[in-house]
Image (cartoon, rainbow, N blue to C red; front, side, top):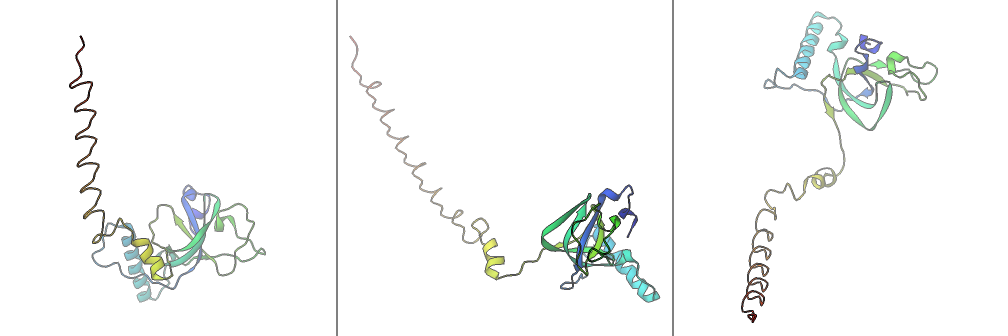
Length: 204
């Protein structure tokens, strides 16, 4: 499961994610125009080349060269278990380590990264180990009516380019009584014709 799952110098940076293989989507080619300086693109390209070489040589593919999508339900980090509010799809590396189901054979510290356990895993749950500095891909899926998942969130007044009433013909900018013809600035009885300034009787 890797040296980082033991008590080594890099152990605090290890993230253990728990879930199952996600077969609803597949990882395609990033394309020839993808930046070669991107570490994720470089790693995927290397893993794909190594997989092709292993298949040609009819040898087993190394676990480090396997990558897939998995639906993740929870993770452990720094000795604590975190349950995701909504399961998410994540790009993971390796085949995943099967977690023992039930309380008869509890998982080890290397498997879950937590020193005690009150609840047990169900069957067919896998664990993948990642480092906090690894690059991955997260896919949040939302299924529903188009008006709820697309129209309502996106049809706001701030992003309407062709029909924005706040850009064309705004009554707030043209003809505002606050700027043009204000009785407070023109013809104010307080400034012109005040009895205490103009035409006041002279004192004798």
